[in-house]
Image (cartoon, rainbow, N blue to C red; front, side, top):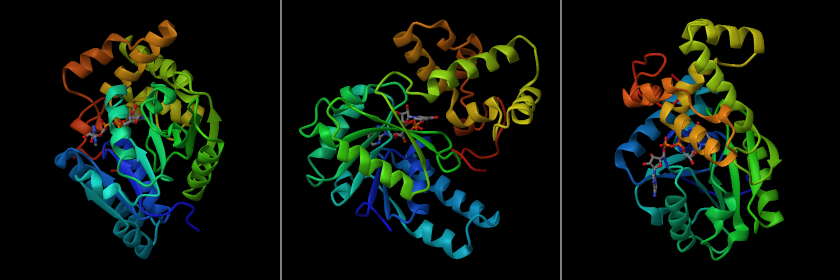
Length: 292
Ligand SMILES: NC(=O)c1ccc[n+]([C@@H]2O[C@H](COP(=O)([O-])OP(=O)(O)OC[C@H]3O[C@@H](n4cnc5c(N)ncnc54)[C@H](O)[C@@H]3O)[C@@H](O)[C@H]2O)c1
């Protein structure tokens, strides 16, 4: 049963937005994806469609389920198409001014009871909500990347978030198969507090010659049971995003373990950002954001 009135609206068709839209459509919600960039929207929709096709080929979805999920997704570059959404899930650049302005714009378009979810890795949920007329309806969510494959979503209230908004957010996430943990509106929530220093130490291990990209990934998957090694994961996350998140957490927490190692800067300067540019630690024959 759908808990939220369809459509679910996702803003931003990048790595997280396309992953979250995949999750919503697979979970049975009509889903509209909005992006300011026509090119970004096209790539996001291509990633979503390829993911459903791959899920069908792997037998994770039947042909009917894959085709129905596909049919539930549509894209738009017109923000007024979000007017009828039951929930708007924002997944645009990690920039407070951009998110605040966008949420204000959304609030002027949608119904008074439409719920707002914001995805952030390092920003304050309270700060994102601060320009809203109704900050009580905004909840912070932090999906793990790739969102269609990893089940956990961290949920954080802003200072003025209504308990009912958070509870509905959690019910929605459960209805699309997610596991949730409630955390505080603090830099990095729970996961990035230990993931970022760990990824940095894997990069340092590589840079110091302790192992190769492949051997470190194999060691992690084989020994720790992770579904993918750090370099496969960083290629999906994007080296630019890792650099940005790590730097911002370092600036807020002043803990040197968060500071990105020099290899990250070298890769970002070279444009080797990961899957989205076709090359990161590994090389790819397409620039889809996740899946294959
Ligand atoms: N990449 C990750 O691993 C990850 C994980 C968890 C959370 N996050 C967070 O999720 C958010 C999105 O990250 P991402 O990696 O998907 O970014 P991304 O750069 O891959 O995609 C962002 C998309 O937003 C679009 N956009 C930018 N401004 C917009 C606007 N005003 N209106 C509509 N669309 C707009 C861009 O065109 C782009 O397609 C960020 O806040 C990030 O911190 C990222």
